[in-house]
Image (cartoon, rainbow, N blue to C red; front, side, top):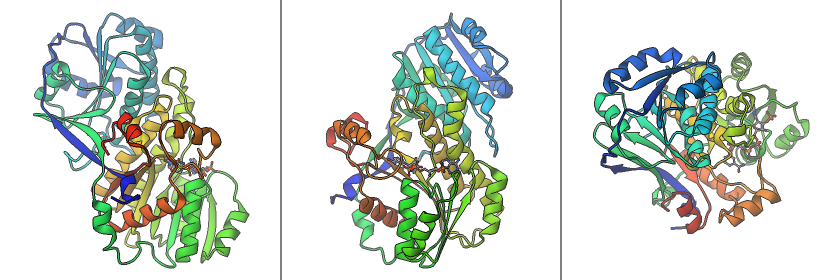
Length: 443
Ligand SMILES: NC(=O)c1ccc[n+]([C@@H]2O[C@H](COP(=O)([O-])OP(=O)(O)OC[C@H]3O[C@@H](n4cnc5c(N)ncnc54)[C@H](OP(=O)(O)O)[C@@H]3O)[C@@H](O)[C@H]2O)c1
């Protein structure tokens, strides 16, 4: 296995048989959003006798705490309907619920969603908005000292709800629950890189092609733009919220770009994004490289903090889907999403970022499976020389954890290779065996 291949990991699922936990349902309360009463009545049919309670922003945290404090076990269930809009009220209610649960200290907390993340067991994600609850829940499990389980059901059925109530499942990772077994996610290496790299005849990038880079003023987006200028004389359109950096655009042209323009826009602003696509027809590739990073433990996280981190990835990707749905995509070769290994490892203090990455990954799946656009995801780990965490502080912190920085030439070679394959999602990590083990990565 060569050095590059050893950095590339693929999502994989381990099948496990159900085991009874011998749990009694008396001390259990089931929580639903007020807007999902139909789901509640469906589940109620399977859980006879258990208490049901509804979440909405008209219920204050104190009221919620007094309703929940006598229960040992709390099961939250959501199946949020598909929409191009984000229901921030419900996301705020869920954040408030997590804070209340930390106060009331139940012994078991389950977060149950339906097809909210990508899994090989089902073709397409159907409830990507609930990826936010998965991401927040995964991280919450690492920030508290009681059991938090994140369960993603293939579907709601009597059998599956029985196992939600009575089965034993590991916490920390999202578990996919099927009718007759459950699946634990992991990341694995394989020989796909060496098998396919020698067959690569030419690049997936077109010489003189037109590429839109959302977050193109930033570290990774800027690096890729420069590469496309140098190697492919590309026409580049960069998007970011900050004012234009004329020096960057001039540099791109000096480096070989056929043209370089900047659109000052927030990717979460649908009308502005739609206008940008109108102004630039014939785009051959889109790279989503935008992020906002604002680390916070869930107990200290404000609604504004969560919303600002979700915005570029969740709203920004929803906007892309909405625009591409109605656009002639015959010239579009790919949409490449830069996401994070955080989707899998959910480090404490980064629940907002995990939620943003998990939901963005889920939307990228929908773009591919339902909208038939060649969408690809790279979940990067740590870039120490470029981008938002390129500082001595992070380099030292990561080095202590056994995680090395991805180098520019490595990242670019992986992008070139990945785009030329049919592989849909890879994670790129440069880490010691011990670090991988700690992160539940099989290596
Ligand atoms: N760097 C790493 O180690 C690392 C690791 C894992 C994953 N990633 C992923 O790689 C991508 C790029 O990261 P990076 O390190 O290059 O970050 P970066 O240097 O901070 O660049 C991100 C860019 O996104 C733009 N942006 C943020 N919100 C936006 C919005 N609402 N609309 C339009 N543009 C927006 C920012 O520009 P404005 O502020 O001007 O809008 C910024 O230039 C991200 O998707 C990240 O999740 C990076």
